[in-house]
Image (tube, rainbow, N blue to C red; front, top):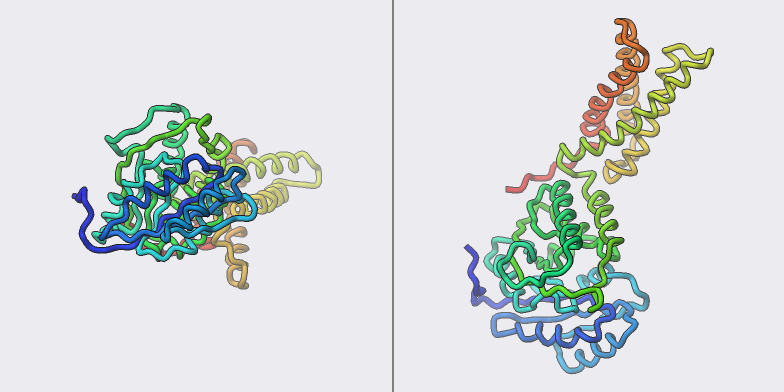
Length: 375
């Protein structure tokens, strides 16, 4: 079991504080952070002002003069929380790196608890969960909480983790872990992005329950429904290409289903034209659907693994398409030959083709990297 008090070994913690229009709370937040420093914990604080419109930057600069532990980074244009964290991570020098919002929704004292599994060398990343705790938790918005938990559930389905709070601010990393990750998202999409990339690294992840002193929108809360939609997109964007097989197949079933419907519509349309018999109609419809299928695969599912830099890769894809076309053609001809209508024959053949296509593309065209399974 984790000890409530951290071991006596000395460690160095870098805390990244993204700040945007937090002039009313930033000073108190920093002073609370500085209070956790003791003989066993060396602290440095990197505050990144994201072009605040209030006097946040002025307050921060005064704090930096007063306290030597503070470094100030300034964005000349507003970029978002993810961009501020990206800047802060570049300057971190501690053994461990933590994130602290400037709005006092999270208690800095609990960072000591979060670094325990890191100091004991049983974890590489520790998340502070607002939903895994018997501690103080302000009661506020039902729908906001429901959306957070739903996003965590969907993220878990894609990453195969069992987190309880993907959207938490409190994430603590070994410095070498967080600095090897290239962060792309500039806003709150950072949360699902970092979880996806941490999951891909196959590192040791722990959760610890924390308190949560939520604030209302009137008190300055910034995250909104648009950020929820963005988070959903980011879950898909950063996980789809490496999601567990059931999820990947569901995604491909949507892609294959879309291409299958397109295939069917083109096939039935061409059959009505006098110059097309069943052979030409099947082949023409299949080629059109294969092109759509490939486009959707690159855009939605396998885009990270698409590397068309050799003749062999192109040849493999062409052979997969040809083999799929033969499956489609002879399945339709066989089913029509035994008395099944053109429509139903094409539907059945399309379902068979979707399944065969998925496995051929996953195994041959877009092979997955061999990532060791987590214990």
